[in-house]
Length: 82
Image 1 (cartoon, helix red, strand yellow):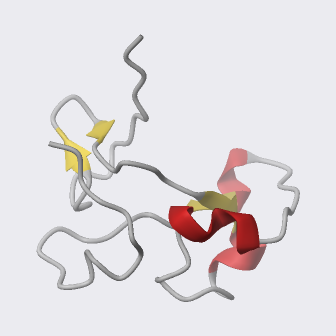
Image 2 (tube, rainbow, N blue to C red; image 1 turned 45 degrees about the horizontal axis):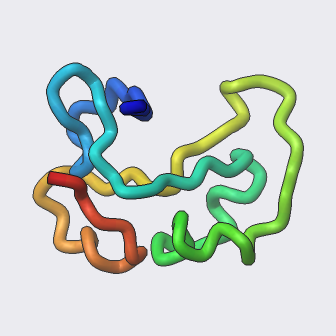
């Protein structure tokens, strides 16, 4: 079964037509943790991030976001699916 993560952030390196995320994996954290971890803490290191609750979707953050054209696409170990 084909499963997709949908994302409408069109300037993300992993975004693709149809609002489909092309990252091989993603990590979503609570906003309270998002600023505490550097960009290289992403999905491959998800087990090292403490679990935290969020009361609404507005209190969450996709740590996998990388702006299109950025030179930071290899800092987190996440790859773009083809």
